[in-house]
Image 1 (cartoon, rainbow, N blue to C red):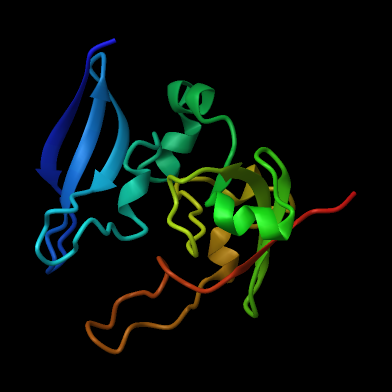
Image 2: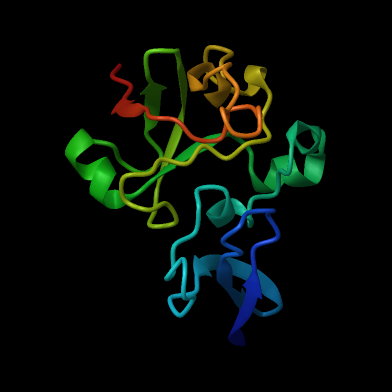
Length: 164
């Protein structure tokens, strides 16, 4: 198996211009990580970037057989350090909640998410989730002060296992 690291930059329009290392195995990207030598971000990637390898860009792709076969269900990526004290195992059903709402899905315990950050990859329809509510049930409907943009990418949540 031929493996190499490809250096690049995040294409998001952010002022940091995060540098990335993409691991490529046999011609296929298998992991994205921050570049520890970047002078500003020092290896940090925002919550949007680690999911670049997901096959869904938006909900249109959730209707495509190829993507569905590779990613058959929505998942929440949670770091092992966060999953263990909550009693969450890989593949377990979880409830993700805050004061605005909740949704349920399957946990993927992985260091693909930073400790302290749970990642719910986008691109799924509400009906794809148990109970018919996606991660948008936990987000604010308000707009940002700077730029008057939607506040729907980041918010605080708690994650707990679904019992029973």
